[in-house]
Length: 127
Image (cartoon, rainbow, N blue to C red):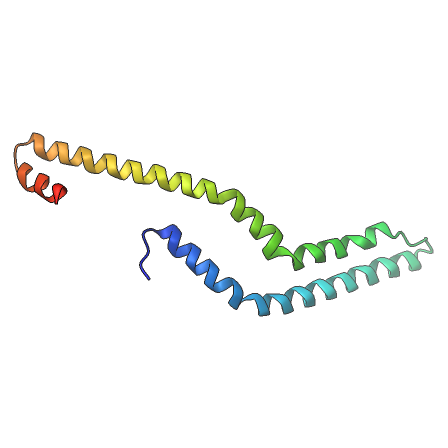
């Protein structure tokens, strides 16, 4: 595989590593989210019962919403970030390419203005 720039290398690495880490992430997501939700609900219910208060249901739904966000992290969060930042990356890469071309052109003009090695540089750019 030949890569033209760092963006292609990083994108290729991301595309290769995401499926490899999917199994580990699935176990971690479900385990951590499930245990966290269970402990949160248990603590809140225990606190309400110990104070002889009624159990409020809406705060108990918070860990389940957080668990859903954790389970769909690669598709929702990473997908959204990649979709939003991809045009930014392409735009900044185009700006970088233009600056490099301008810098090469200025370097060529500087070298040719000195009168030295001008023909060698022109021959190299023509061929």
